[in-house]
Image 1 (cartoon, rainbow, N blue to C red):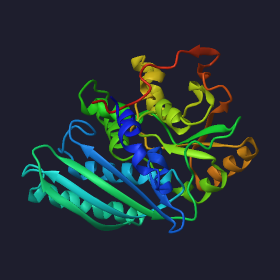
Image 2 (spheres, one colour):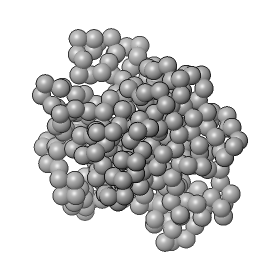
Image 3 (cartoon, rainbow, N blue to C red):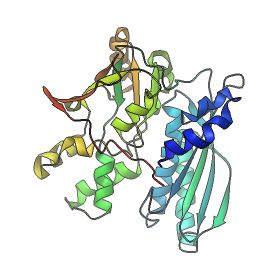
Amino acid sequence: MNEFEIINKYFKKLTKNNPASFNLSDDIFYDKSKKLAVSIDTYNENVHYLNTNSPSLLIKKIIRSSISDLICKGIKPSHIFLSGSGDAKLFNKNKLNNISKSIKEELLKYNLKLSGGDTTYAKNSSFSVTSIGFGNKIIPRNKAKYNDDIYVTNNIGDAFIGLNILKKKFYINKKTNKYFINKYYLPDLPIKFIKNISKYANTSIDISDGIFSDLEKMIIDQKFGFIININKIPISKNLKNLISKKKFNLENIISNGDDFQTLFTSSLKNRGKILSIAKRINLKITRIGFINKNPNKKVILKGQKVLKLLNNKGYYHKF
């Protein structure tokens, strides 16, 4: 079974009297009366990250990955609770100093308050983050409308290249390697868009597991399909150059997750407004496709060519 089959079979039924849980079909809890939004994420060594050799970068990735769940919903994160498990290799003076310094930098960067957590011993390291924010409303999943445009913020695919460089699958050059590794550890969260996305988005999700798998999750309970032009999916100049030199397949690179960008839909009437906002706040927002009425019509175009829906649509935990 995968993670979603487990949730649907064993745990969804336990939330029937708790509408703020959204039947466990979203990444956050939202209590409308209290205007309270909560998300929780867990990160395990050898699953979500390779090791703790760069703890100052790793903890930043973990914090940003966690608050991304709220940001994509139009909620400004305000508090985090951070728990960590490890042994003396992680909890030594040098690494703890680096971790503490990085946490402080992230708290200042995103105006967060560290509000609690837990520390335990374990042979393999892991971290859990609970993120809290407040807002008058959120952007839910499964509220797309027919013919909605599909948008994504910033660039896709850099993090996957960074991960493969860390895995030593290939080497480019020192400068370019550093660029991709930083994109893996330090995603550019679209936090400047929080104030505006709630006005224009009908549904949204953050891209953690892969753009195609997360797109399917975003509309999973709706009888809709989509048409995406893969050539419109935004990628960086560095990634374009790498694809050209290494002859990588674009579709394989962009479908692997760890981007932590916001994927959302919006009505056609909002095109000009979204473009204007993107320019004003200096944030890359790209229209990559649209929603259609046929749930069996999930089409990925590459120019005029229709691609098969990828076997590797993203990451799923399997048990």
